[in-house]
Length: 402
Image 1 (tube, helix red, strand yellow):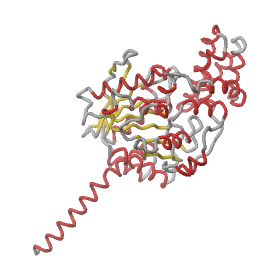
Image 2 (image 1 turned 120 degrees about the vertical axis):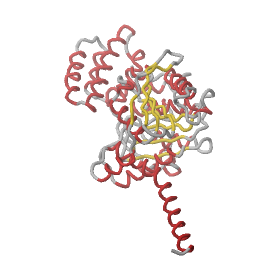
Image 3 (image 1 turned 30 degrees about the vertical axis):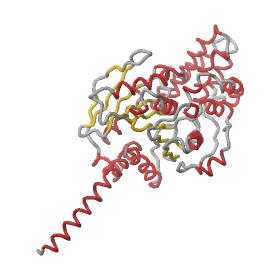
Image 4 (image 1 turned 90 degrees about the vertical axis):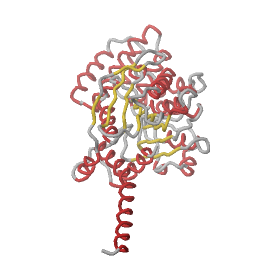
């Protein structure tokens, strides 16, 4: 073989090697989406090829100003690309919530060290400034632990209401320079605007103008859907002390909590949900008025009746002093890149929240947004077109570059 021929082959091999290296991150992102969507057949084989074995470390505790909270670390067997703090939304099971565990495992198999935490208030279905404080404290603590550090910066991913609150926390002075990126998965931009939607079905702001000018991929598909009864039940739980007499708040809250538990079970174990729903209907009859009527609205999923009761109360919170701690649009933007992912037809937190938040951050922060038909509310749907899978994989590829 001549020197010229050998040199040509070396160039070809070098090019092929460069293409392979450039392609592997995309394959990792694609593999993650395939695993999360549980796509069968050849896609599953491809995903398995790049997946790392993982281990779950024993449960640990993380100190915060509100007390210690449980956490669990999912560790990839090979090199960790970065540690990420992953948080669920409003759910009683916290770090044991099955979909959160599945997402943590899928992300760890992609090479992330994933520490799952859950704010106690969100486990009680309460959306409070204390949740933002908990996220801030947890991220700061994780960034200081040698066993979790890579380059000293941490990825932050919040699901549902914890998505917006994670963005608020990531902009706070104590951790702004410790966050590699922050991602909101089905989260809100302004809590009072989201509450208005849940209680009225209306979106505040110029939606059509925002859609036309938006940099969010898929924004043209945004529509307004009737709000989900689950989200409205969460609103009633948070406003119960403003709706019923003080001596009825505890009993009504207990009933709403039971309904929300049943609603969560309906997603993961429908058969277990049935007796809990039945129990809550019987419980309703033990309540005095007006709690009995409001509990009936919850059990009957009567959004059209409960919404008008809560709307003026929710709108009255627009200027509440706690809103800056609960709304990214009212807080200091993070220095880190912001990623916004939303299901286009989400009716718990509407996808317009992502569109409006991205518009608010124009010129103020680095934002990448995607509205996907592959996503419902903070959950990867199992039915998807190849185009949707590819778009979502491209979104995750951008995150993996951080």
